[in-house]
Length: 392
Image (cartoon, rainbow, N blue to C red):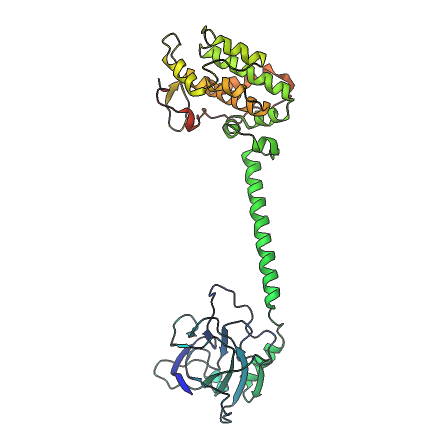
């Protein structure tokens, strides 16, 4: 036998604790649920909740480790036993509200715990013991290796112990490990569903109060750029017939190129004709980078600028902003083509992008009654379009 602690412990709310849990964040729940005794709560794995008679103040406690079951000492007024399996190698005696009077080691096995008390009623009658006053109630906690079995009351004398035993017997047993696992699974599933629903509601708000179709949600390109400019038009393009989308894409390119002075350039006009005919774009428009180099390097191409960001206003080449509309309109997927061509074209109009988007509605009644965009911002071009040489 070895004594690992023999001294005073500060208690509050008639409680002190022994803890050897590997998860200190785990909820303790009801430590006496399903037990016969109510003064040594052992229903939670790796934890003991020890009741005292004294409400607030210091009590006397001795902790002993035995190799086998020690003999009963009948001078104790109340004696109970329970099983305890530490989850960690270090066991802590903790006070209510903080403080650890002692720590000791236990081997990784199951123990029988005997909790003995004397003076519980006197401690409860005293209620509070101030610093410097002698302790009123005393306790003994003994550990020894033994197979797990139900707790039991070996001796009951005090009114306090009788009260807490009655309370324990009225409490339901704690959940089994299987029930805990199922509860954790359900909680995780509920949290997953909550997050999914929160994401869905966020998406609905982002898409103007409507949930986007999978087709619109997954279309490549600048769909979110168009969503920010004109979310209602994005929905309308999604609902439109593919042939209408293709016509809108080609029309948007023409409008952007005409406004930027590109449609009248002799070597650019054939690319617009090829787009209208559904043919492959001629060189250099079969490669966007080479097309940029040609457009920006030709002194015969007009030079003008637009502001493309309301947050950080910056003038950029209008011709460079309009150019991606051409390659976008040639995309095999009609929705991708329409979304990117309209976005690029609207961007090429800069602060007049809202007027262009209104023009789309008028030019294509097939889209139906599309609500006006809610104060569309000045377009912001994606980073890949902000290459050197674009600024005016």
